[in-house]
Length: 334
Length: 300
Image (cartoon, rainbow over all chains, first blue to last red; front, side, top):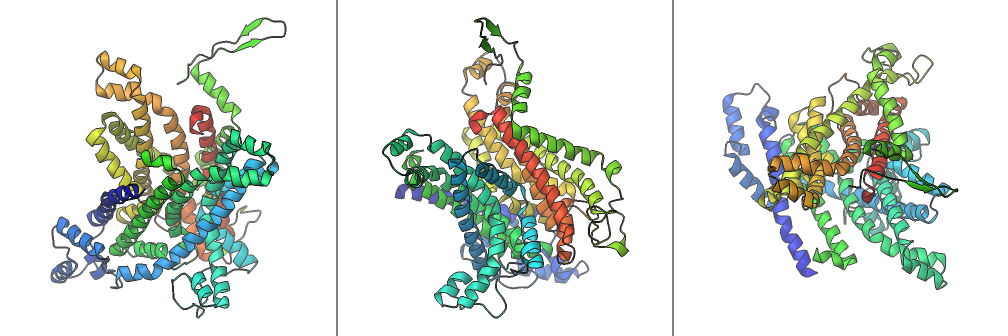
């Protein structure tokens, strides 16, 4: 097991190097000259040259990449060309917001997805099954940013139940421990902050998790249908076990193995979806930071955010691989 | 692939053996296709959507680009069945014209991705070794990003516009097709008939394009159908973020993005373009699911 993890970790090095190189190349080869963004089109040559030197743009491209890579390895992703603030600091400040949103979304998606998938499989061809599958089809077909807008219209505009944007009401932030407001509020016993943070979180999380819920429900249904036809399930029933035990203890446990991979892959998809959800709900995370960066052509900011998300994506996939090999030991030999 | 000739024997009640007419592969495909409910529904919706796109100039009651500020933000009414947008343009007409953009972007992006995906996947699978490592290494790096993120990065550097959205979405989808083609080529190239084709003197190009690729078509067709739905969603997302087509082009995602500003007093502006996206994506998903059952039952 340890050998497998080490091998996987070693394989990460070329992939992460590639990820860094790819973001760097895309941003450096084709974007408009950052000096033009900062100084405007009519700046004097001297000023442009001075700025190019300051930003290191007068060096050969491979030297620039070397500098970027060594700085990135030390956790320095450079400065925003617009606000001149440290990108690493800003990303770290916003990181917990995205993590809280993504974790809540995947939590909701997993619970709902598995529940609906199991019901659908156990009651195959019933009205529940058709209902779930049609909803799941809608879930994979609906743009999540549109679902987010529809939820805002229903729950904020018409019913007035939930806030339409932001992460928490101004002045209600709990004391920072983990940066995750729900957790911090619980740890400090600040129930007001907990409820307020939860009200802000629930809509974006459900919207973000909708696609994953649908995918997990479909996958659970498919694997459950396969599993409940196996001989050992018949044996379990023949032993006189109750249907509940047969389904949840015998069938679900085995049916869930492939579902775990899907959940892991969804975690990655969520990071992409977060860009859109955060924009819809003005959620102060990495996604909205990235989109704002694109709007003002702040390429170091875009580069840093893309690099961070790419790295997390790769690490999450590694975690899924490891978890999968733990659940299904045969996989290690492949 | 299964034998093309299917002979159905039915023993009738009187004991005679009845042999059905021999069917060609296309007739067999049509018969199986018609039996798949999702494929038929998907295709039906799609035909309606294509008609909307093609006949938009005839069907649209108003000019989709003509603004009429005095009636801006007006809710659906008898004159404007889906209401008007923030510039007083008829939303129904804009949705009809938007179908042209979405369908074209979806199909073109997937065509681009298919071209390079098939080429790279076939080369990687056929030659193996260093070629495989190099090609799939690049593909793995591309797969290390959520695709919408990569498309956003490309749009940042390419700038706005339909053609650029097509390129960005097309490029980020290449790895998916390359992977499928590589996998299929790897399994197909070991078949005896490929060895036989090589033995009679076919060169590599002919082996790949004439003997191997036609046999990996099924998974490619299924994946591309679902790929179009993903491309349409991504294009809408880019439009929503303000990185898609240039205004005033009627594009569903861009319409949603613009309507967001007035969501509190005119929610109808964001409602209908979103429904149009959902319906279109659903049609391709249904068709894709149906085709998978029809063409390649193993993929189920």
